[in-house]
Length: 125
Image (tube, rainbow, N blue to C red; front, side):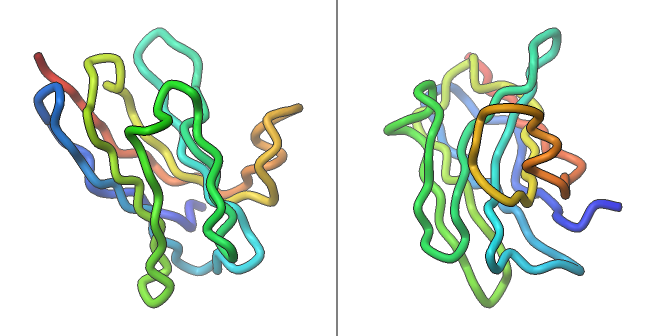
């Protein structure tokens, strides 16, 4: 069962901003990584970012570097994905997942074991 939950998606115009939240329940992000992924219709799932919860160090996909940033709220057990300068191509279902690393090699489902249900982000022109 999902032990992380996303929220904050919605409809936004191109150039606008949204902040997504990934909140842990029944698990802790301690010693974990938290990844954001997205999947647009007809396309493969794409990694957006991967954050080391303990340190805040985050790796970003080239497609979002300089536009997306993450931050943490320890009390709320929440990792935020602040998305700015949104583009039409950012439209997708966004998922967060708790993992055990940030490796992009191998099966992502072996690295990220706890997935949320997703939140839709739609960018309009």
